[in-house]
Amino acid sequence: MTTASRSGGDPGSPNPQPAATNTARMADRPGTESMLSGLKPGYDSSTKVGQLSRREFAALAATAAAAPFAGVRGISGAAAITAAQLFERIKEKIGVEWKPDSVDTVKAGDPSTVVRGVATTSMATMAVLQQAVKAGANVIITAQPTFYARADVPAPPAGRGEPNVPPAPDKVFAAKSAFINSNKLVIFRLSDHWRQRRPDPLAQGIAAALRWTKYLSPDDPQRFEVPRVALDELASSVKSALRLRGGIRVVGDPRTNVTRVGLLPGTTPIQAALKLLPTVDAIVAGEVREWESVEYARDKVFAGEKKALILVGRVVSEEPGMALCADWIKSFVTEVPVRHITAGDPYWRPS
View (cartoon, helix red, strand yellow):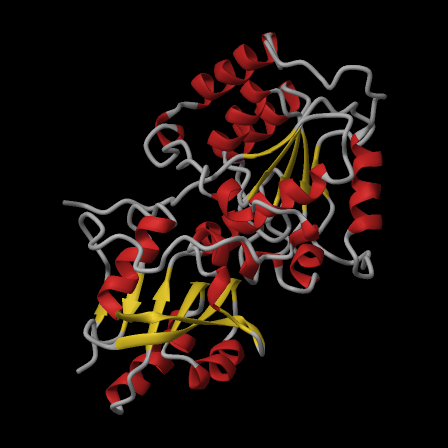
């Protein structure tokens, strides 16, 4: 039998795996799992930001700009550092060749801005930007675009087949850009090069959040040998550990026993699933094309194979890895506070 389900309601049994000591080798810094255990769900942007008029949005930006960084102090005695200098340090320390044609560039703000605080996040939502200002961070390092498209500019992208037809202005783009400018924020995207590090910090992060680092396969950093658990219990465990509200989806028979799990955080093509699924019982992934990996997994189950695919969403799957990014940046940026702000699961589930 083939089942494609959405895990709903309260999580079932608690995480079936015992808490693991940290074995993630993120910059050789200990305490990864204890650090990730403190992640809090993000501000509920699905209900708040979407209800703001342009005037209310602009007023919010002006209010925050009137007293930015209130109550936050820099590190005593530390020399000033600009955003441009910070980004150069990241490029020097990243450990892979920096490619100039990457999406990893400044997306908003003035790079000559003096840094008062740094926040990493999987997605620079309005809720995250508000929290950053409140926390005293004026540089935000995000894994995903700030302005909703690969171009990542503060204006709607042109439609397909209409490159010469300028799209109509949009109040959400305009208000978000105004908030960034009013608060003198600098937004830097760090995605391509962060993901190229080995081992993959996104896989390390989500493994630590799931408390699976002790189950890591010695032959493959994407595979984990976990204690035997039914698929429905595994899905509930993942939902609880990643604090998912509604974005989890599952393909497979709920009764399938799982001992070998593969991780594919972020967004991955079908080639990744074709390579990994034959070696595991289930894959926990971020985002895939539904007509590719999802239907491939469903047909494998239909053919009688005991396989499963759990999707948690791209933003949620990258969040723990961006928390590790904050920890990594702390190792070479000592002039200002560095923290992580969680974007959270953007979805909710109707009752």
